Length: 132
Length: 132
DNA sequence: CAGCTATTTAGAACCATTATAAACTGCATT
DNA sequence: AATGCAGTTTATAATGGTTCTAAATAGCTG
Image (cartoon, rainbow over the protein chains, first blue to last red):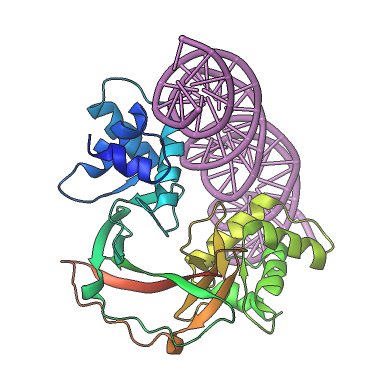
């Protein structure tokens, strides 16, 4: 299994549930955005055994902390995650709430001229809201 | 009262509660960021009579719809609002969850090169996360 | 295999937000 | 000034995403 080492190297035990969630999240042609509820549904569709909701939350947070997932800053009643962990941005379609990746090269360099004492920039995220 | 007309012109009845909330939100030297709970506290401090939490929610949403407040896209368990409705961005201090305004002039022009068919750009918001 | 710690799990708890429905109020009309 | 009505406020209940709890289970080291 190709995810066993990845997990071990991160200090996460490669449990059956985590490996199955890895399959759903990372064994895909394209990256994608999801909420916990959408992921739960995807897991139900692809996996025979049940994985409890608490484990899905735990795992997603563990993966996010390790940098395998990113949270997308957006105002919604649910938290959105992204399996695309490269430096990039998002279109947000206000009409249907769907997200579209916006590559760094489509935005150009962003130059933050102001500095905050004693602080480093961890990330710069652009959200482009779309309307009709 | 200077807010009566503003409200009437927006099709909102200038009720006592709305006028008092206007005082707290807009009769200030500086713009500020707030959550509903923080606003509730501010109202308690400044106003003698009680305004119910439901009214605070209703009013904030009404004001946002009319463009007098902006929601700040950020992942938090609470929704953040901004009384600064000019086009601008935010630093987000991960350590304490505080926001700092980042003026448009401190970021420079952002050129979104990619277009989405049939959609217009409504807003472009940059969130700069800060760490130690 | 033994023992320890990490992980999983079902269900309860939490808490921000929204819905409800009754009371009240601003305001146009008489 | 009284009337009527839609808009608003209110306390409270309901909702729903997320987190907590504590017991059962599983991975891993010696």
